[in-house]
Length: 92
Image (cartoon, rainbow, N blue to C red):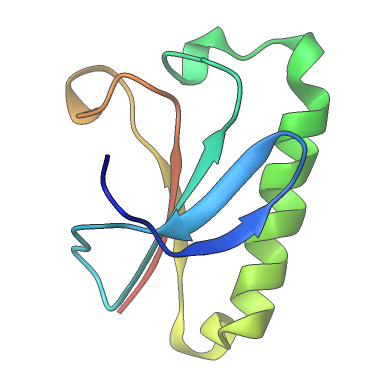
């Protein structure tokens, strides 16, 4: 198991620093449910989607990323290296 530095945990997600970051700030937001990719999301996942938004917004504020600029990314298909849905909050 790869050690991680947890930033947030809700009933539906875990947010932590990427263990092998490509950016100055590289945070992963991952659902606790086993969802293989973005296309697996449906109307039953509204609590998770709400947590993604509120968690990303709070991290942007806490880390002062609005001034520096940031991106919230979800990869799919050939661009998805890990077979579990996750979002990248990146800056730098």
